[in-house]
Length: 169
Image (cartoon, rainbow, N blue to C red; front, side, top):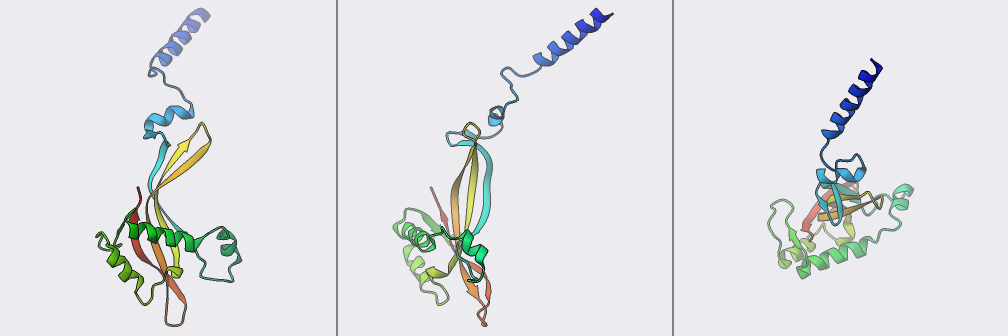
């Protein structure tokens, strides 16, 4: 009787193993086939939208200042505008989705309530790639939207308005 149970157990185990796909494993890297596996890693998130404040609106907010101590807001904004004016990246009107010309960009910059110094938020659309062998994650940004600060008549911060959407290569 024990011999029969033993043989049945071996047969059941053999059957279970044989039902697995050839080469199937349970390691982390086996999940690569479930995602787009590229040279940049395993795609784990696509078109994630993140809003990042790049300039504090409250000078008394020590935590915001600590979080932004490494931010080079002016340099970031100036380079983005240089990319737009040079045509290295394409910009679009946030509302109409129409491509913007250099002339239209200059008109945006001439608006009474706009200045590059007021750009305090950037929205990223990005994809995330996991590298299990390196234990790291890489983000690839596909587009950005700059947002500039708006204030009410009493000078109270109201929120951000979009400048444009820029598509990156």
